[in-house]
Length: 224
Image (tube, rainbow, N blue to C red):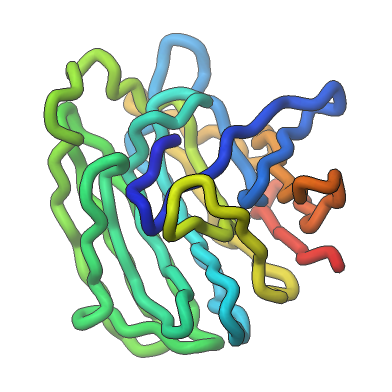
């Protein structure tokens, strides 16, 4: 996935233990059934108590493939302050904080709906009873056949401001994605229990997260 500068990520690689290791992402990715693609993905999480200089994003989205070159999604970011956002990466990020402010401890629900050449992202702060729905066009110049919507994502991510920058995650405790659903264009619900796990791995090889996938959701625990 090639995010805009504020949310760019490092390349990942797959281990022989059916997990993926990444320099700054932890969470789950669900593949669409063969011959089908995702239409709607949703989930709810509670904003952890974040502080300090290290940055973090918590987001839900639909990607084109496991390469995640084009991703429609939204959630929250922390960079000294908390903000809500939506985007069709690698297109521009829409800051929705003025409509949906965010505070530590707030319950956030994100719903992503994919369409032929774009889609909608709804970010709802259930604690503050505020929500916004953004209609987003696909990134400019991308052929429609490349917008395949084959991957559903629930991620906790440290992010780079400058491409190539080494990142560190704040101590986010445990972040649980609950009420997770993934529905295909053929109206089939794909069990979340089939999601593959991603773990945050530092350049020294240390694993900084422990992801758990169950039939009801995905949790990411910060490892120290």
